[in-house]
Length: 97
Image 1 (cartoon, one colour):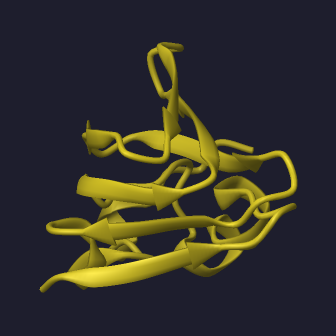
Image 2 (tube, rainbow, N blue to C red; image 1 turned 180 degrees about the vertical axis):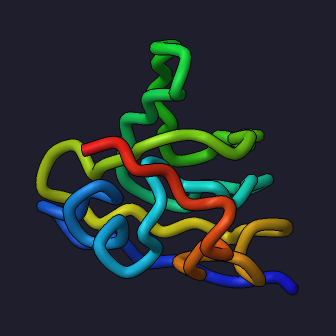
């Protein structure tokens, strides 16, 4: 499933989606083309990157992300939209706070 995502300034996965997904980080991998804006991504292992307009990025599962600045981030996602913001099965959920 290919999807178009629009993330407004102030959006952050861990505050906007984590309560719905009930996982510690985003478990949907993304292969995407970024049309506009800047997004900061922090992987579970601490690796960070900034994705900007014109970038093609591969984000494996296990990350947090947020919009940087005042411009919306618009992406075309060629992989992760089918599983985006879905809850993990009970056995897959972690009990970390």
